[in-house]
Image: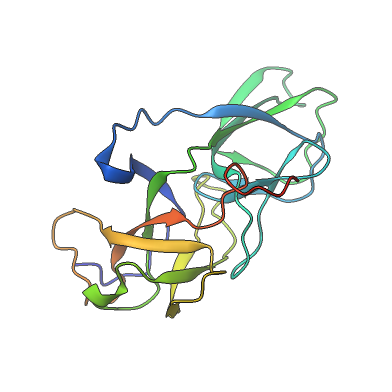
Amino acid sequence: MSSSATPYGMIPTLGLSSTYNTQGFDTYEIVDGYATAIYFGDVVKMATTGYIQKDTGTTTLTPWGVFMGCRYIEPATGFALDSQYWPASVTTGLKVYAKVMTNPFGVFQIQGDAATTIAAIGANAAIVQTAGTAAIGKSRNALSVSSINTTDTLPLRIVGLAAIPNNEWTDTYPDMLVKFNNHQLTTLLGI
């Protein structure tokens, strides 16, 4: 039973039609010194500069994918660091690589911020943006249950309930399955 608000962002689970999910990612650059922290499970977008950025939208995300971590040279030690999150404003003087799950047909698990019903399947929803947790490098974003409706511009489509023990639609904070409605890799308009 999900009775605690413990949002964790978006976790890749499978593909539509239950296609096999390798949990693979693609690698893109983050501009060195980028001033916004990005956490595991945050939605990211491709900027017109060719660099990955955190997508801070709520009702109007333009996702390139979900951030799965990064690799950069840690300035204090000079060692390569694989991290679950990008700490804001780190300047390495070198390239910073983001690991991004880019599958436009991927399905993600996300916690809702309130109870709902099975009637939410097929509806659209916004995302609640909350600062991540640096101690563990995880996102704290959630699905906005109060936004659930048929509006086609909302970024998330609810496709089901996560198959985990004691998880119900009517729980205080249900864990749901979603996909992106407007992925940057499937829209016809260029960046």
